[in-house]
Length: 246
Image 1 (cartoon, helix red, strand yellow):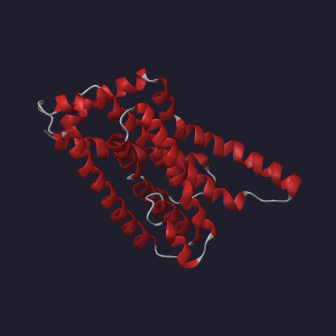
Image 2 (image 1 turned 135 degrees about the vertical axis):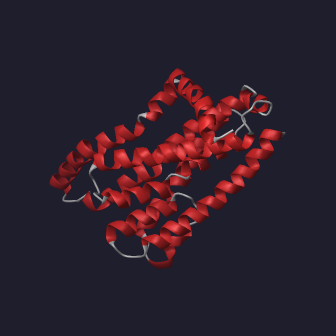
Image 3 (image 1 turned 120 degrees about the vertical axis):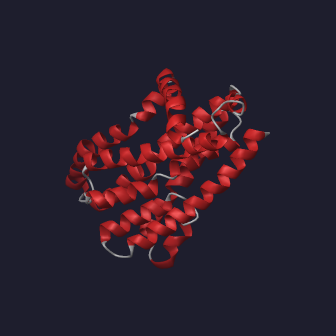
């Protein structure tokens, strides 16, 4: 069964599940909420702080954008897909799937590539709407490509390590501090910035800083980041396969 056929079979089910769950519906709107917040509220807050304290928030806009879009968008949709997977585990849907025309390979491919494509599309739309750290469209595209694998990585992490949605919420909260920790690398120089390279969200952050500053080779960061996240994704896929077949 092709990916397109799998999408036609599973897509409407996912949409119905998201529409039925108020939390998942809200999470789907988060990127646009961030875009509105960053475009209108953050500059207003910056002006107020600058006027009262003399501290200028503008040099740190890049951290705000990194948190909201480069980490936030794939994390939100990774969580949505992760919770859908946990629901399917609880309902024994994954077990029943093994006797349907949809192969496990097609199913996993769908679960990996759909959140990647959604994340890329939303970053491409929402990032320019925010207007905080303007970049050419081509650079935003590559940023979205490098940040997007975090969505299936988080989804598979939740699906393979959490036993249910309650545990999934706990894992999501616990992983949040880890995923945003690479933002601290902004304040380091030299080799110290690379201590965060083991965390998947580091690479897209690094690419954003390189593109904004013009210092460094963005293509090296892009390739290394895709390889690093690809390895993590492959390991999670292997574990997910074992969990499903148990």
